[in-house]
Image (cartoon, rainbow, N blue to C red):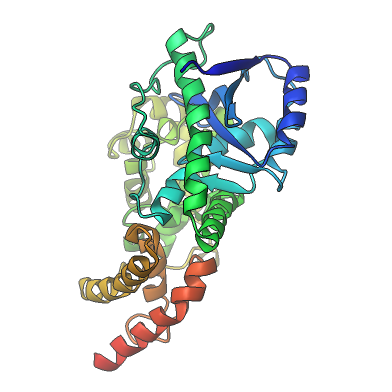
Length: 377
């Protein structure tokens, strides 16, 4: 069946269509973008599906995104996306807004126990019985004109995404539907939370092995790398390779030849930023002790693996009872944060990352399990 496609190539047309979409209970939203040599995604196409038709918005021709921003912000219209973390970045970059309420069909599949982290093509095949053609994800979405294959691929995405919502929504209980929207709101909240460049050093592999003075250097290197990647709009590794950060903080090279010996140090980095990096390291290394970060906690010991397994089992049992994919229940990071809050002897505190219905339904059981584990040790 041929898909009815409407192109939106000017501000007036976008505003008119957005007025119509405000009257709908939901719209499907998808994006195509390029992110090969840039920090930020470059939008190549925005697709909207209303259940019958596909609307293709050409972002290279739109100047005023306010109508779409207002639609994304309209709490009366559910926005349907799939595995949408990068789509959210594209929309935020273009419009300054993020979709709410957000219904992620990948999450919905997990709540219906159809599978965890399902790809879009497989979900369409399993739920709608439609086999999609091989994707155009690697093609150039900034080229003009787009090929017929690209246009067809993009339009099908918008139409089938809307169809997925109409099939999946009735299969979700009211509770599960609310939880899908809750998780969607959390995805949006995560993107809204400004990542402080000064805190990124905590995520560097093996950072816990560094002394506070070395952590001060690592903190400055990570913060500089993040800010430069954003300012220059290039991938972080183009500024400074991930694997170079730790050895730089550890050995603190004080000349270009020492810098060149650092793991995975690119000659371009030495040429462009070498002298600056030497000075940055020197400045950070000479900070007074009161300005050093605190030493980072060691990872949980091997003996803690059994307790983590015990905590995971609480989520798995609840998932089985509710008919939800077990992987969707309790995140590994949340369980580790819980265990680290009081290991080995307690008392334990539920981490902020354990929110909403998960906290309500499983929080006390997790704390009780840890109290029991403490008594048996």
